[in-house]
Image (cartoon, rainbow, N blue to C red; front, side):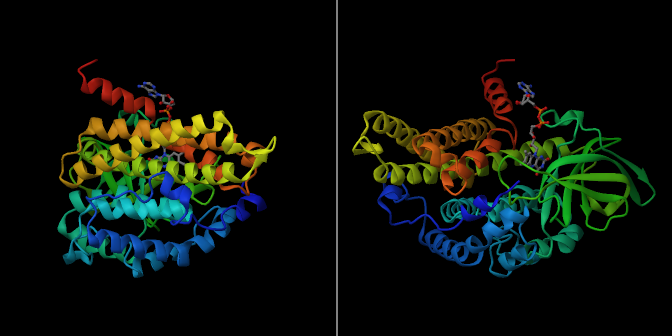
Length: 405
Ligand SMILES: Cc1cc2nc3c(=O)[nH]c(=O)nc-3n(C[C@H](O)[C@H](O)[C@H](O)COP(=O)(O)OP(=O)(O)OC[C@H]3O[C@@H](n4cnc5c(N)ncnc54)[C@H](O)[C@@H]3O)c2cc1C
């Protein structure tokens, strides 16, 4: 449950000019970014500072981002950049823009809003762009760009998460409809989403259905209380004989497993990008803190233990940043492998959790207080090792890539 203190903790933004920020590499040259990317980064930062960060505390307290925030982001041009012009988008399929948006969200502490937006832009939307037919694209994509149609993606069920083949939600053809029976859980944007890409079992195997707000028999359950990510509406969904028109089948019946394999690498890269940006910010906050706080007549930063810890973390964060930037460039040219996406996902999320934990330790008791942002990093980072494929599953992928089992 978010507390008053959690609300207070979201005030203020990370100063890009701060020495700590430069020290963790935030100002390092990145030659693969062109002028248009840097201009986009500046406008994303201004937008987040002005329109998002001031509201985050309230969204955290209420456990959900105001739905209108996404429509406003659509009007400002931050949704569906990659949607082709024929369907109302900018037709810019360049993941460097998505990466920069995520980095600015971490720095401006706009994470509740940005996690919903990134689920929409980076995770769900690519399925519609790649696998919908023209009629579906005409029907759904313009709303995805304007923000009138916010997306969710529902794979996980109460009885299965990692093992997608065990999905039990069924969709049985009945004339012009599928009748869907089952339940999903832990769904990001679960309350706010208008269109949910839902994995179901059909006669032909695992399939994807677009299930819209207002579908008879589709109900939303609880908005779940979490350890962190308090502003994000993570929810249960129920399908009780939900009648979904056959025109809402995405791609082919039985094709979903292949579609998921194609798109999960991008989702995992997005998680790595956010994790390394979160680690950079958490490290910068810690450096700032240990330079000020004193014990035994010296700053905490003057103790050798602190210097060694921060030296190790800075080194790992720098290595992680180089790997993520390399992965991003591979992705832009269509060369990011499933194994490299999995390596980045488990390594950077482990690192983010480590930086948040060590950073909290160096804050002493204050680190445990929600009014200190390192506390939010500690709680928010924890889920990154679990979602988008748990880190154990990532290691399975890397292991199998070596021909082991
Ligand atoms: C905040 C949040 C947001 C989420 N958002 C979404 C969303 O938008 N859409 C969605 O569909 N899901 C979402 N999820 C669900 C998330 O993807 C699952 O929780 C995750 O895939 C793990 O599944 P599970 O929880 O069922 O754990 P399980 O699959 O039951 O796994 C439990 C443990 O066993 C381990 N394990 C499982 N299989 C193996 C194996 N073969 N080898 C070794 N270890 C194994 C796992 O790594 C884990 O440690 C979200 C979850 C959270 C908490």
